[in-house]
Length: 629
Image (cartoon, rainbow, N blue to C red; front, side, top):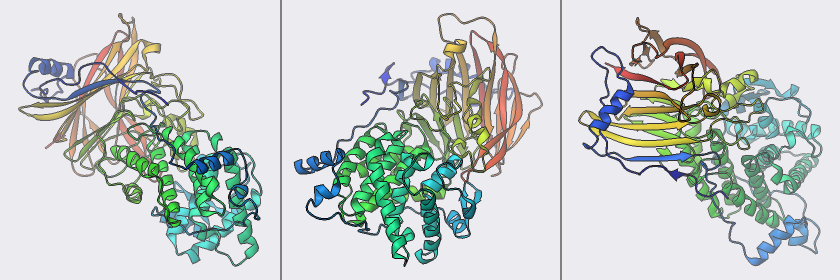
């Protein structure tokens, strides 16, 4: 287990006045450092809350501690014996023949799938992130080369959830049985490759058990027996290999499947006891104290919730109460996920995720049974959320996940997204996890780069190294975070400040970003500073670019002085982007970009870019985004 996550580096409270949040007389944005001077001058006028912490890799996420379920001495003995390899039949009925595989109950899960994908299955196609693949031409063998999304769908049998929601069981069962028979023909016994990765195996077994009426509905007793035997055989494989998962989320899928098999198959008590202990341990190593997964990925957060919802349904099918750890974990997991939901109801684009649709998120939260509000300050998971008059600002203020936890880890430190009144205005490209669908697999690494996020980039280099295998390398080691509430006679605002050392080793500079959002949501003021990492700055100059990826449908036009731009949103609102005049602040330009929506479809967008050369001894770049009219 990991100890305390953070350490305080300054007092917890401070009284401040808010800076004047407006253009100057010439219509230009007032540099934020000038506003800071005004802030200090009037420091004693109003109240403000402040908390600054330093987050470091491995400490920014504190492993939550869940104890094993309360078992009697006899049950602990059974669990230990089963873990050592003694067959379940020997432990439960030592003088009887092993029971034949059969299903003890029918599960009703509250979590529905994608109806469109289910209809496509009945029409003869897998539909994954908008890409159709004929079932008849699908290669189910372990040697088949499938993209990551198709591997998960085909070998994890996640398509069963979609098929179940698309039609009554009588209409969907023939399709499910046909696909399962084809898969079993190409995979007659456990082997290697994607089909036998622990996560895919766990998803497959859990899917077979939760949606058993689809795969077992046949009058052919031989085929039904073969499918039941395949379920039992695969569960036995998981008994021996569940701990070999590539990460904790994959292991969680394996433990959930084992517990489901222990509940729903005969002689399952030893397996259930074994699985419950493993589940508690895996959950304790999957999330932080505030409920965020170690991968910092909202998609992983959603997967963990879905697994626990299905597992709880298996307990209810057997008229058993789920262990307390399942409800406790759902209560932990849901609030951080809601933190990354914008005012349009869809997900933000973080750590490989796309803008997952509102209806899918709402269905997942409803199925969890958790009724809660988003967290504003998920400090350990690393995201800050500001809600200002139906406008949302989400800020990545923590180191990236450690390489062993990252799946589609992104170098997104100090990036932000801004969504006023349901209109995406500033976004990140997102969608790396959808690569292999409509998003070309060859650009997956680029979507994880710093330049694919709305933040500052030095010398076209990533703040954290992005490797081709989906992992992350050296870069950001430490992030300082400070959050305050500012008030003055003109109104109130939330001030976020964070800095990272991702460029310190290479370029001797620390990137610090300050964001101030008015509480009416009409104005976002920012400043990006480059501060020498040592006592003395280096000589020479270095190229920089501050990127603002602009949301879909927003029309951009540069001002005549090339120091600002007008943004006309589809909802009829008009925003002005301004940067201070004068030399040394960089040039503002418009470039092409891409944004991945909730269906995994890449959409062309544009980006505003402030770029130029700055001194290796440091620099400061202010900007302002203001709603007009």
